[in-house]
Each structure stands twice: as C-alpha cells, then as structure tokens.
Length: 122
Length: 122
Image 1 (cartoon, each protein chain N blue to C red):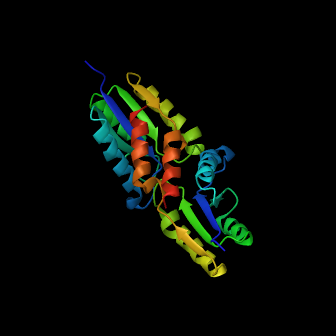
Image 2 (tube, rainbow over the protein chains, first blue to last red):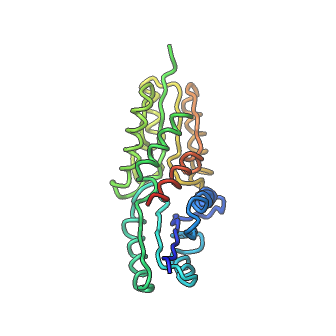
Image 3 (cartoon, helix red, strand yellow):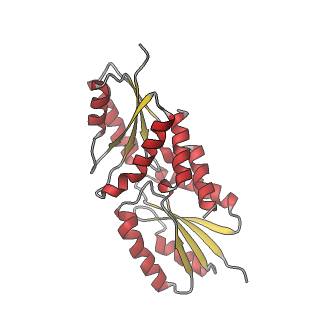
C-alpha cells in the first residue's frame, strides 16, 4: 500500500476570522498542486483546529506521513520553542506515523525572492 | 528635483534577535532591486526602530515619498487597527510627505503562488 500523505499548514491564529483567509487560499493552491496529499490548516492559538486535533484527524483517516509547514514569516519562540514541544508530544502519541517539519515559509529563498519581486512591482 | 523615495518593511518584532533575519535578507534583496529607494526595516513592537522613528529618519534625510510594506502573513488587528492609527499619526506629523501602504506580503497572489511551489518541492 502506498504511503498516505498529509500536509498541514501550521499558522499562528488570530481573533479575527478574516485573518485566516490567505492561509485558506494557500491551502487551496496546494491542494490543486498536490492531489495525492490531504492538505489542511492548523493553528497554534485563537483558531481551530489545533495541531494536535488536526494530526489526530489525519491519523484516524489512515495517514502515515505528515509534513508540517510553519506558515510564519520568521522563526521566533513559537517555532523555536512551542512547535518542537508540540512535535515531541505528537511523536509520542502517534509513534506509527512519520512527521516532517519544513522551514518557515518566510525563510524560504524562493518565497523571499517572490516577495522582493512583488514589492518592486508596487 | 526628483521625488526622494523610501521603502519601509514593517514587521511585527520579536524578543529573539534572530527573528529579524529573514526580514533583513528581504531588505537586502529589495535594495539590490530598487537602487533608487532607501530600503529600511521598522517594527510594531519588541524591536527597533519603531515605524515613527524610521519615518522621522527618512524625512530628516529628505525623503518625500514613503511606501510601507506590511511584512505580515495576514491582516489581523495589527494591520486592521494598529497600523492605520500609526499612519494617521505619521500623516499628521509629516504633512509634507506622501505615504503609501501596500497589501500584506502574505496576501499577495504571486507570493502565495511561490509559497505553494516551494511547499510542493519539499
């Protein structure tokens, strides 16, 4: 049986529901590109689902490989301290799945280049 | 005399000095592309300079047009409430300059597309 893969965009969360809109657009873009993966959103705080709930849902659906993409501009304490603790708990709770965490979106060279191009066009 | 232009990347700020690193890389990329503009970084909180101090510095240097680029993933209360108040204060303090505010980086279509491409390549 092939690996069942999921991709989770992990964002900070905010009180304003409209805040989530760009992440929802990104998830839709990704789902178009990655039809073999289940794409979903999870949040550190103020919005749901939490990362733990989102991972539990993927595991219940038979997912075996999960890639977590921090949808943050930069690596502050949320990614240096909070996320590693969450990952440690998830690994202990779901020892049968493979968890991978990428760099933060705002740190990726091609993303920075696209930002610079877009700003230069304003 | 041609307009003297500045571009300010306006980021949230964090306690960890390393957090600013992707914004510094972005500012350097931009300065390479926009040699006719002064590119600088300003922060909402926890880091310096503040937006007010950064704008005052540009004005003192003879800048007449300032473009402020919110280096945020999405528009939450910082961009819907805090930034408009800051802009209002700046416009009152420096009526001689032209201030422009762009969309947030994380909302720009080409940036979202680059994020999706990069994630798909992981």
